[in-house]
Image (cartoon, rainbow, N blue to C red; front, top):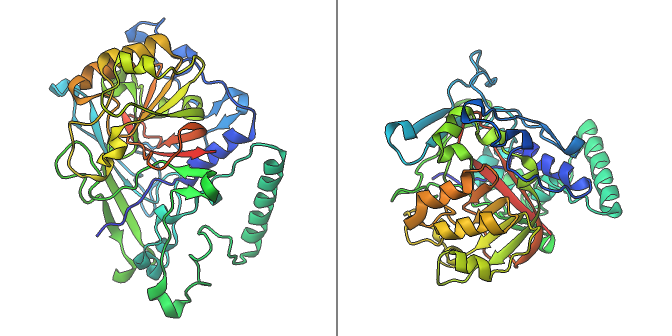
Length: 412
């Protein structure tokens, strides 16, 4: 049975750390840089692709996925990695892509099960990697010094190839808890909360029952192309999932075909919007997000990112493989009220769509029309206290994709 995984690309999380070491960054007014704006005609729309934001405050050090990206052991690159089974040109109401990638291509992270088969069997996968190793909160002078010490220690460990209990797994993961002669006792730990809430993982793990909008979930999403049990030197998997499943992000091309054609894809979203101070707020549990509800929440001007926790979390809808059309989301008038009366540029919610099913297309169109708002969907918000956090959301750099799986964390 496939094990749950989360997208833990180390470089994406490293980008988040670079963001927090510097002074807070004011979010731009748009999900795209100002030069994208609607002052141009649709024929002249050109998305801007950047690696550096805010005069060097954020660096994206992930490689963009494209067909010529190198692939381990191949001279042909990864080839086609995106398919568009549902296209607005074929009368679908939205563009919905599917991705297929070897897990060790592009900017990626290895888990111990890559080259140790007993760790693979025991479940030491990428979902068990420690987010405290992959992310450091650099706020304050003491934490800056702590980060420097961590970097120096890591450099020393790498250069000398020494083993340490302070590795990619919390204490209790490693061989001090179970030697190689006691493999059966190896138990990987899976956590959402680190250091008493300093880091909170708000991403749902992918499993065959991850919901996607069908009755059966995403099904088998991992294929083990090369197995150490079959004589390979390492384990090597391939990942195949719809880009709008699990915790994910939408680009404007999801619902606007002219934006899709112009190239307003996931790779062109602004990381300044996806990373920064955010408000987690509870929504009244007995109704959708209408204009009346939005007004009652009293979200002050100046708040750029809001994560809306709804009845969806209480009902644990993201843990059910069957798509449930009764989920809570934004009605068209609620979406319009948010656009007209707040400064919110990142809208996060706890099910597969920010839009209520009865207003699925109209609400999306309101949010995405101006390209000023980024939608993050399928967040894992149970057990998190309402309040202000620093959110880091990093999508895969999928060239041409109108959606992407995303790893989101909160730092307190």
